[in-house]
Image (cartoon, rainbow over all chains, first blue to last red; front, side, top):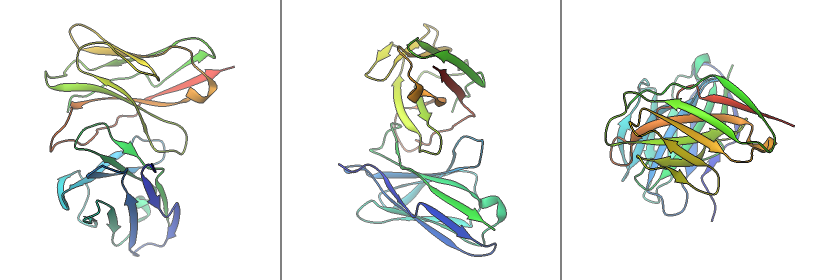
Length: 111
Length: 112
């Protein structure tokens, strides 16, 4: 059984561009959460999707948006990239509990 | 979610027990204590969680004080592969408000 997978592994973008990150949850999981982790910091909650709807959102601007598909996979979109958006983006899946399973992350570098 | 306090770092010798403390004095009755760890450049990994009773699994033991204001994660025989950042988190176990609020965690260094 594959765990949580994320793509791409690494990504380099320039300021002002848009980026889409993808996540496939662990088999049987219906909830996907996204986190941003800056260097040297703990992960910060961006938002969570359940039944294809955003159920909860952290303190992130509207430039950050997402989507969940009927197969429970999810995308994170970031528009108008800033240098400060450079971070490790983590996806976690769960079955409506706090026991979340994390993917390896996507390392985004904004130049 | 209640706030947790952890020392920034600690170390222990390989093969010895590692006892990682966490204070959560404002924990409420429906909040569980969760521990995750993050090995360098990987995603966080769930370790264990508990409400008020002590818990043990194949990875670790969790000791929660009777007043629930603090807890200790115990790695009984630490190995070099246990070197990681360990996060203590308190939150309700499930439901719509199920985000995880990470602090800075405690960096455990296991020395040979």
